[in-house]
Image 1 (cartoon, one colour):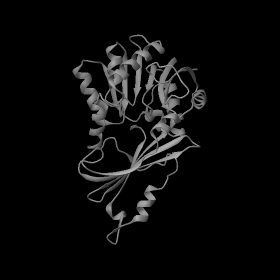
Image 2 (image 1 turned 90 degrees about the vertical axis):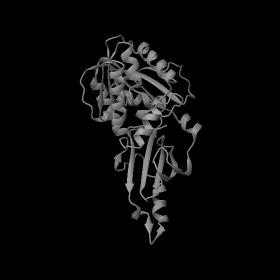
Image 3 (image 1 turned 120 degrees about the vertical axis):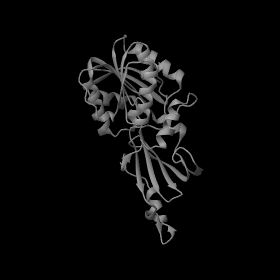
Image 4 (image 1 turned 30 degrees about the horizontal axis):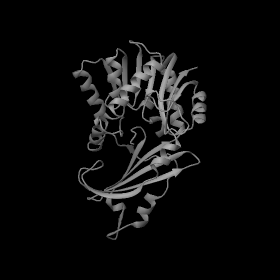
Amino acid sequence: MFNKSEVFVMEMNFKSIILDNKIDMAFLNDLLNKPLPFTPSEKLFWDDPHISKGMLEAHLNPDIDLASRKPETIEKTVKNLIDSMNLKPGDKILDLGCGPGLYCKHFSQLGFKVTGLDYSKRSIEYAKKDALIKALDIEYKYMNYLDMEYLNEFNAIILIFGDLCVLSNKDRDLLLKKIHKALKPDGYFAFDVSTRIHRSKYGIKNRWHISDGGFWRPGLHMVLENGFDYPKENIYLDQYIVIEESGKVSVYRNWFQDYSLEVIVDVLNNCEFKLKTVLSDLTGKSYEKNSEWMGIIAHTI
């Protein structure tokens, strides 16, 4: 699963990894060492011309749950959120990390006033074109939702497919305060988070492959994929070191923080939210303690 909010990339040139015409194994080993939780790198990469194309294709692929969930899951989620948050046509909804607008489209077609924010220019451009074709009145903005500034504007805000999990505690609390500020009195906030059951099922990946064109690069390249677990913090990292034929090296880090129900309740309370409903997912499936995900619906205090 790739989340688009907090995946960082660190780029180095070929000279950094070559010493006296040999691979600097010590330097490469340093890249493979376990970093501190949420160690940032240089920049976000969602607007990379090649990677953003692959991400959009993943969003729009109806057969996989990778960048977005499958169409039937999205439809069930929208229906459940409308019922669970007591929404009615004309209410204003904000979709954070909206991607190409898959949820926004459904809400708009059902009569809601929708705004979508995303940090991928390619996804936002696609969403705007799709809304124009379908004659949907949706406002899309290309921006980092950590920078949003709304005041008492929305009846409901959604953050779907684990986007809260990719944030450090500092950024998470900043976002929750901005969400609270953006909601009208008694507004609702719906989101989902992964649990440790999810990681125990899929495990930590340590592998490599060579590709002549793939998700990361259009040409010949090698990918060293390794994972790190931080059990005390309930954090794990998927890291991808991409070495191109030209010698350019890039390190991509995808951080995730898992949550228990007790922790998420404390986090919400500290940011002036109260838990309304906990589910196994946002389609409405009843909560079970061994669920890989928790669907959370909260409202402002």
